[in-house]
Amino acid sequence: MLTSRRHLPSFAALRALEALDRLGSASAVAQELALTQSAISRQLQGLEDQLGVALINRAQKRLTLTPQARTFVDEIRPALTQIAQSALRLQVPHSGGSLNLAILPAFGMRWLMPRLPDFARLHPDVTINMATRLEPFNFASESFDAAIWYGSGNWPGTGTLLLKHEQVLPICSPEMAARITSPQTLLTLPLLHIQSRPRAWADWFTQAGVSLSGPVPGTLYDQFSTITQAALHGLGVALMPDYLVEQDLATGRLAAPCGAATESPGAYYLAWPLAKANDSALSLFRDWLTPQAQPEDPLPR
Image 1 (cartoon, rainbow, N blue to C red):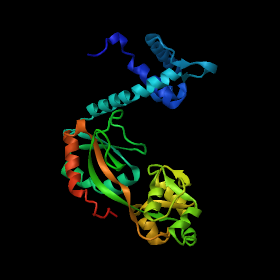
Image 2 (image 1 turned 180 degrees about the vertical axis):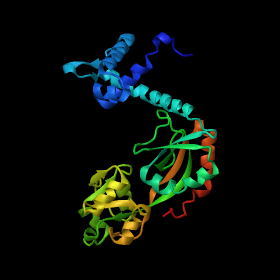
Image 3 (image 1 turned 90 degrees about the horizontal axis):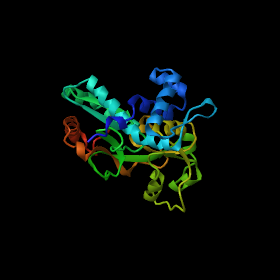
């Protein structure tokens, strides 16, 4: 049963509180919500009065959230996001349903996008809403129906469909490649790490028969696009999926000093919460992907 209405805070006030936490200033909140700063201040004051809790620090004419308020916002943000997305779907109805899908940027662009026109042709009434994610998905706090993700595929509370194993190889500028005589040599050079694969280099060295005395040093990048540019400009050696660098290797802009690619421990999966396993749009999408999810298939070029 829902809580009595008198205990439910104003939705407008909750939006203002969440926006203040995200944007950091009352002026930015006022601009986003198309209100005056005084209106924002009144909403926040009313929320404090209703809840009986201090939510805002008002030092030096600047509004910031108290620790209690930050915790409160972290708890309510998923609900506010879900309400907004549900309202949008209601305003733009689709007879075939819709699928909210989280994707990894590089794999989503290179593997999924070339295939999607076929799905759109077969199921024109199904709408796929996509959002890129670098951090692990959380079906409990985010309103995704499914995600395309990299890992072991054994995420609790989810069903999975294997899409593609990943082949990786060290790559670098041709000038740096001339200094590499063996896998062991790599440990004397700057190594570039990708944020989503913290153990990638350690796993590769193990496969190459190189003993490590501790963590693999190097610099950290959050996306494959930036780490590729770093390698192109001679900043170090990157461990990359082969399908992302084949063109640069073919043109000689990058070199692969250690030979052919090897299979990494993880793979790409479509994952979905078990509670949504029978959702109609998800079922259509999963059934369409299944015959294409063949690890031996080359990626589209």
